[in-house]
Each structure stands twice: as structure tokens, then as C-alpha cells.
Length: 360
Image (cartoon, rainbow, N blue to C red; front, side, top):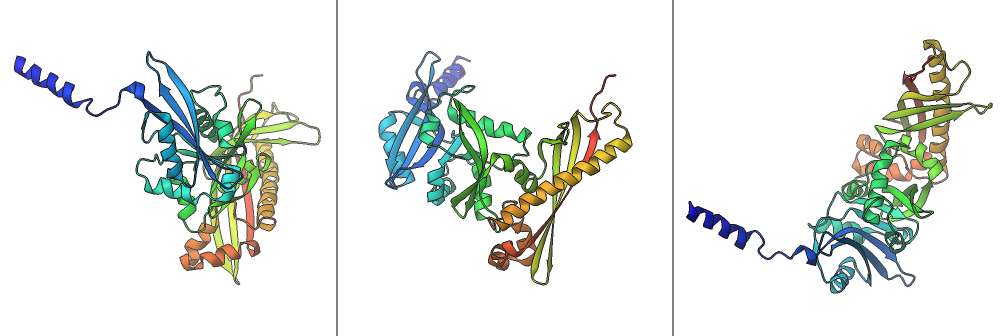
């Protein structure tokens, strides 16, 4: 029995920690930011969690400049003096200037490097990523974690997209008929807020969908999205509903014109009904409300779709892929070039499942 105990002890001593750095000499990269300097030189900011012993965890920021992703990565290794743990990055943050310059090298680095975490959340920032990551987090250990939590918690409101990881970025970039659209964040007082959606053509950002319009673009673009809709009348009385939206796309091709039919079904629960006779929401009254606000949201969504098709001539609704699926991959350029001449019909229907709790 003693011999077996000695053998087990020998295995633990000489194999479990072999060639491993002690925790005091390791660091965890929680986030990476990419910027563009005024002289067109690239810049990367790394946010680390470092262990200092006695259960003390600290945050460290390192910024390097270089000509490529791994040029800056090598320079970072000469500064940190610590062994980093691979696959720990929570956030990839790209500044607006860098996004407009192009991100094909960033995409390629994540695609080829097997140590990169493909579940990393990705976003574009209005300010430089160095300034963002140097901020003091309010609710988390690092700003990277705080921004990631902000983006993921937003799924519960404003019908926000949930395709926000590097894997989703690959799909948007490489699949026919799709464009990169990722969250856009900005400084708000002493913290960070979602400011809209960053829109790309190929690997370059071309514009930002503002916060006040992002909700409606999200309804048109996303399936199984959640959010709140508020309607007001001339008397300032409000009608607020919690919603989950479902989207169906039908594409018709007639006389060389492509017609996109976007049908939105919104399942809703009434959260506030500050309307006349609100205590008596009969079945007939609910049907009346469904019809009234279905027309109102349909009109708003149609206006948004017309604006981005006519003014930007851009598919912000992720619908061109359906036309390509019908016409064939060889028609991709035709579908994209003729998007401005296509027609988009939007029809939304609100179905109220619950009128809420009313105690008389």
C-alpha cells in the first residue's frame, strides 16, 4: 500500500506542474483594442488581469504600435514580463477610425490563429479603444468584461442582435449577400453605453445606425428578438408592450425586379395601458388595439426600410441572402447592384397574449 502511495505522490509532484509558470507570473488578457494613429500606424491596447499574490488581482493596460497585428503582439511580450494564458479574450474592441481603415487583418488573425477565442464579443467604439479600456469599470474587474456584459444584457431589450461574436463576424463577412453589422459603443458620462450599430461594406465601416433608429432596424433584421414598444396618442396617453418578434422573409422575382416581403409577427404583453377605459380591456378592445398599433408599427418599419434602401442603397436588414439563395450564387453581384431598384414590403402584426394584471 505504501508503494502505491509513493507512486501517486511521485506522479503529482513531477507531472502536474511540469513546465508551468506560477500564478504570480501569469496574466489573463481580458480584452484587446485596435486603433489607428494619425500617421496611419496601427496601435493595439491590451487589457490584462494580473495576479499579485495573497488573492490580490489587479488590472494592467499596455499599448503598442506597429505595422501588423503580430508585430504589436511581439512588442507587448517585451513589456508585460508575464506569461499570458491563451483563449481568454472576452472583448475585441475596434475604434471607429480603425474600422473605417479596414479590419481584414484582424479577421485573418482570428481565423488563422488557433489560440484565439472565437466566442469573443466584438464591437466598434466611437472613441479610441485605449481611452475606453483605461476607464475604471463600475461593475466588473475590467472594462472588457463590463462592455461584454453590457452587450449581452442588451439582448433583453431594443430587439438587439445576438450575433456579436467573432464566429458571427466570420459568417457575416464570408457568406454571400451579407454585411458586417456589430454593436457600436461610446462613452456616456463616466461609463459606456450602446450608441447604435456599426455597418460595414466588405471589411470597412461606412456608417453608424443611430440609437433612435437601431430598434426598428433590429426588428427588421433579427428573428426571435426581444424589446419594448411604446405608443403615444395626441393626448400624450401611452401604450407600452413587452414584445418578442418573429421574422419571415419571402422573395419574389418578377420582370427583372426583386421584391422582398418582410413579415413581422410581434407577440406582446401589455405593460402599461394609459388609455381611456383601460380597466376594461375586453376581447373586442384588445382586437382594436392590435389593429391600431399593428398599422402604426408597420408604417414606421416601412419608413425605416425605405430610408436605408433609398438613401444609403444598403441592405441593413440581412435580406439579400434570401434572394441569392433563390437566384443562385452567380447572381450575387446582380442582387447587390440592383438592391436600390428592388422593392421592400413590410407588414407587421401585433398579437397581444396578455393584458397584464389589473386589481380593481
